[in-house]
Image (tube, rainbow, N blue to C red; front, side, top):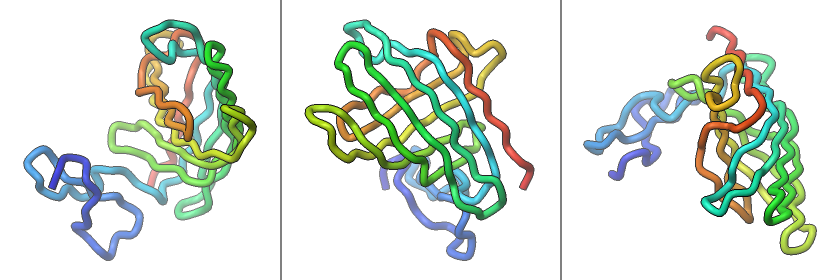
Length: 161
């Protein structure tokens, strides 16, 4: 199976996402933990594409207790394309490298206001976060790979399991 394909090593563990490595072997929990208690907050700016420009973001995503529901809010504006994504967080994954992915649904304004989905991956690398912390977003209308932020800060707090 291709690398990063979701597989299932331990069918009794409903919290870990098992994925294939480069050799096609299924690795337990390599894709992250969908039950971990964690909280991430952040705000700042990135350069969304090779043409330059800026995009601003702000978010809070959390799971307050082990195996609890994820909640939070996400806001993203690409100042060049005028894409605005605004919505509620409904899923959160804590990855082995301490990055966090969260996703949800809300409203996007391109080409006209309509419902859309988003998936965001963040990593708290250093304090301060400028040119250190990482942010990436995939929405129904735009995909920006995870990259270092040019302004702002991202915080990740993970509760022990």
